[in-house]
Image (cartoon, rainbow, N blue to C red):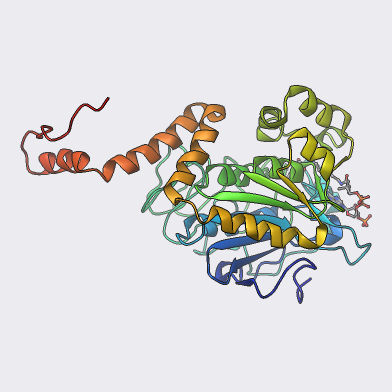
Length: 375
Ligand code: S0N
């Protein structure tokens, strides 16, 4: 796919995103005006399954999009079709050849990423997932300015993610990788694969921008969960297919992939999708409330761009507050924290908050007189 990226990709719409240089498992582009990001799985020969290295790149691209103040919408999609059999995919989830315990015995069939590329660190010792982006912003709950970190843990200088503060070099999630750079198949000290795709889910979830799943083919397993966690989904009428295979292969996304999915489409349908693991067409997924729009295959990316352009006409602050408001009810205290962070950011812009700050710095009592108790 190196030359043409994807059959649905219109080169007139996109330029290479600098942060995507050297990526092997995904492609990363910006729209020519810099307002939209296109992030695409680029392993069509395995229905765009992700290995740890793919997830590293995915995280880096999404983090770059998150921290780029011009970008308001991210399209997450899958390149295709497969040169092998013409099949299309959004993403078929975790690459089963290198998954979990004993996964390495299948590793020989997995091409190694190019040495020195991608996740192998922007800042020397950065590893996966968390990926040291520029400066020190990291994943998870809303990074605002400066050295933001995720969750409740402040990192100073280095990037951290999940609930883990890193020391010096960036680390991923709650599971440290064995080395400082990630490869196609990385295990933790217990020999288990890293599940940092969940960090990607959180990055999508907590990104103050709209993420649209653009589904040109199969969304299966962990790929299905990724479409679930995206804000919107647009699917190809001819090739869009949905299937939750987790229980077929002994894995289970017990977080957003299932519980939040049930919030979206209702308990009965969600349980059916997981317990029966049947195939659903794009039209059927639309009927069930899992998909926003179904469009002709050839128009998929054009329609996705049109959706993005409509969103870009809206107030950025309104969109971010709305996204976090939609999230908050399902995200418990973290949802409240994220929403509260945004409210605080807005409050800091008021004269009232400036008076509080100035009074402290000037060692005087604050004068709240000009600020009424609104009703
Ligand atoms: C997507 C499906 C339904 C498409 O069927 P179709 O069109 O008949 O194509 P196939 O002939 O089956 O596939 C074409 C080629 O692609 C390979 N392939 C497809 N999916 C995968 C995959 N996920 N991993 C590895 N290879 C894949 C096929 O083998 C075939 O190759 P060739 O031509 O060489 O034979 C169908 O393909 C399907 O059902 N795929 C599997 C979907 C699935 O079960 N995914 C995993 C579900 N679980 C997760 O995603 C959880 C996350 C996870 O597993 C994980 C991730 C990272 C780190 C660790 C883990 C972990 O759990 O430990």
